[in-house]
Length: 346
Ligand code: DAH
Image (cartoon, rainbow, N blue to C red):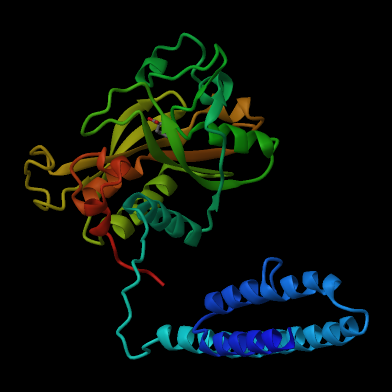
């Protein structure tokens, strides 16, 4: 029996030495030390031995088992180190390889124009105001001198949610909200950029959702000449110093008098072309002096305070400035269009 154990030990040690990887080593462990292995078998057979031989054999089995266990552990350490070394060798990084270019995103042309206009007005002392896109009939119409049934409401086909709640059709309600918050006291100088909604069928110049930027200045002694001066600065800064502006009489229920501002056509310099439809002028925005009713409804004394307001569509401005022909391009996110504006700002 002793002889058999010695052979077994030799065998096992040989196999441990030969194991090339951790799996093979584990197979050896299971084969020799496992429940069905030869050592367990020897232990089972001990019952048949004499009382003298039994402790001797027991001790020997333990020595053999410990030897095999120790060898397996040593070999395991060795194989693990080898595996790590192999993995490291395989994963070596070639730092001399050229890098892959990082794809950078950039601002949407509409975001760019809105930010440009915001920056301009901020530089003139305006603050940015915001209001809800889901608006009440009161702020969207009534507080702007458009009572229920007023025919001018038809100019802005609306998405109503209930009788009294709708998707705002313009950013003008932010005028009424801001003035009301001031409780009739002190000056206001704001611009409000934001999304607006109309029940229009989408085509090259219409979108059921688009953007507006509203402006409002309220103070003592604000005059139409202040509005004209402000719009002149705006037109020159956004469209170029050589642009001229002209104000045409118009009608908006919330302003009196009301005007529309045109800029001289950049394409033909004013002589007339197909961009300006032969007129030499391009319509840019609506504006006017805040109607006394609007001031009074918001709590301002219209004998003490006056103001001007304007409203513009940045999509239209971006279309003119960048030569984009279809308003739907702003919303379809065609990467080919967006890439044309891929100037990376810091
Ligand atoms: N709210 C008008 C619209 O959506 C635009 C507008 C015109 C706003 C004149 C104004 C203004 O503040 O004074 O058609």
